[in-house]
Image (tube, rainbow, N blue to C red; front, side):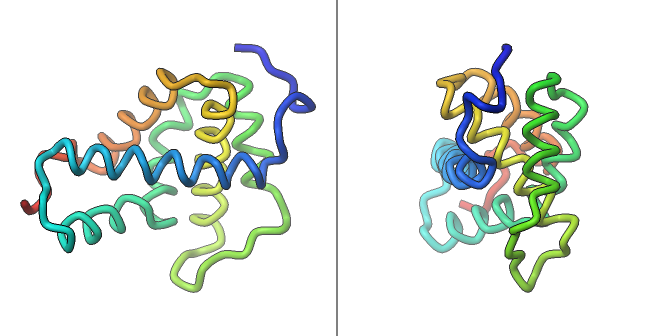
Length: 135
């Protein structure tokens, strides 16, 4: 994969898109795992999509990034206009934003298989596979 930064939307836009990609992947995983109670689905989804959880996932996938992914991650991580939520550290929020930007880049480029690869690594970092959620 070779893509120039000038060919991509801003890292803010990539992070915005990646947030949706991440959330949809998690929701699909939970539903596929057989979870049927809406309360359990929402509670489980929140544990995967929090900035703290995404930062942990980012640390797990970072060694698997190619050069372009690492570049987008760093650009998003270092972007100065982040409004972090009150329940997340600045470092966690920046790491989560970087991970979301990488997912957003792949969604923008149509690289669904790479999104799946990275998300599987991320989910393994959480120690769950979607099958262990309270049904």
